[in-house]
Image 1 (tube, rainbow, N blue to C red):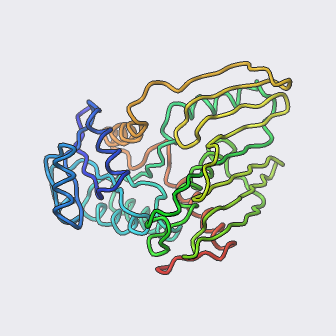
Image 2 (image 1 turned 90 degrees about the vertical axis):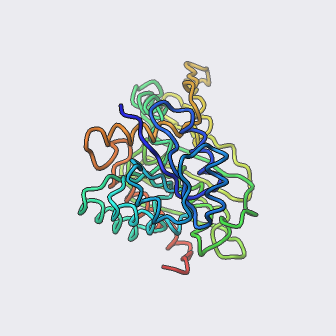
Amino acid sequence: MKQGNVAILGTGAIAALMADTLNRMPEARLYAVGSRDEARARAFAQKYGAQAAYGSYEAVVADPQVDLVYIATPHSEHAAHALLCIRAGKPVLCEKAFTANARQARDVFVEAERRGVFITEAIWTRYMPMLALIRDEVNSGRIGEPRMLTGNLGYAIADVPRLRDPNLAGGALLDVGVYTLNFALALFGHDIARVETSCSRLPTGVDAQNAVTLYYADGRVAQLNSSLEACLDRRGAIHGTQGYMLVENINNFESLSVYDARNRLLRRVERPAQITGYEYEVLACLRALEKGELSCPEMPHEESLRVMELMDRLRIAWGVRYPFE
């Protein structure tokens, strides 16, 4: 695999984590960083060893040495920045939530397909080796027929300005709730017959905490909770007719424990050694680009769109709407 030159749009915490990851990957390197503030871009480049620093996103996508652009800007900006990259012919790895709403996601995918440019969503859990292992265990019959799934993810981070701001598509759903939804859809699929949901709000109007119940056509149920105001246990569980399994940290799978109907531990698997966990999505992109593909099989465009449509559905039920919609 040819070493890929990766450029990062944005200089926040997620951009820093990706920069650290790239610096420890032999298959890729941090080549460039872009910000609307050139001083910030230069400081970031100096700290993480990027070769190029740009004071505009347009300058990043104009650089012929860039092989892949990682978008690490606020949710509200993802669609515009993805379209900027696509129109410049640059492959894109766009941080979750993919866009602010499903309409934006459709526009981005249509433009990418029309121009023949690669794009995928950086929902890192979808690319992790542990997800395949969890799926195999769910399908193994060890816990009988899976009938219920639960997922919790939350942090006491409601004071973070970006997460409070409706103009930046803030709220618990797009930041942490997206992981609980992806956990459910990755393991139980999307044949959802009914959705029940409610949320509490921050004074700014975005969701602070939310509860979502997905009722599947075959009777299975997924109960999901996310929060910006409380530290939830980060656990996922799949309950079957003959036992259950617990997943530690659905935001970055740490372990899987399988129990029988008498609560006896049958199997425990720790996650394999990793750099940060971000390396898997980068490797998936580089593999797809090497094959000339326009998406990653780990997170097809239609799956990203299904997640966005479901999040739109939840926000409609809550009456949460972003000012720019």
